[in-house]
Amino acid sequence: MKLIKPSDTEVWTKFKNGNDEALSLIFSENSKKLYLYGLKLTANHTIIEDSIQDLFSDLVRNRKNLGPTDNIHFYLIKSFKRRLQRQIQKEKRYNLKDNTEDYVFDITYSIEHDIILEEKSNHKLALLNKALSELSSRQKEAIYFRFTEGLGYEQIAEIMEMNVESCRNLIYRSIKSLKDSLCGNVSIVLFFLTHHF
Image (cartoon, one colour):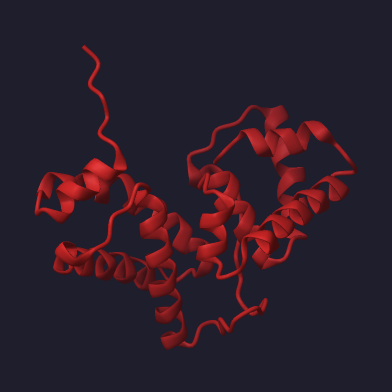
């Protein structure tokens, strides 16, 4: 008999009520994703690990006062990004002022992300990575949230502190830029859009 996976709302409610199994589930399903996202913003592994540890410590300490959520990963990545940016600022590694491109957001799809592709796909991936390198950091971050994390426009806008319409435009321009860089090669663009790495 197939077990039905509990919804995020159910898991979050159990966690808030002190259930340690729910905490373990939340940590195991999200910590690696948060770590990989952190690597997009800094190469400092210690800051990333400390930010994840601090995030979960605060969640446990304040769990009774947390609001509800039906998307745990969105809730965590939003909190994690703010926390990580504060740590990076403290270390003076990057200047993360509002609406600037003074930070680096790197998208590289490679073996590090457990991707094993056929030779033909590797060629597409190389062309895609070249096209991605021509996007701005904000464009890459928006694309990452949309197609890798699978977040909606409203969620991306909230994380990136912009309005929804600007977010839609940013993603639209990013995809158009990719198409232009790839000389309209639809198969590579589709390859990107259908492989949520």
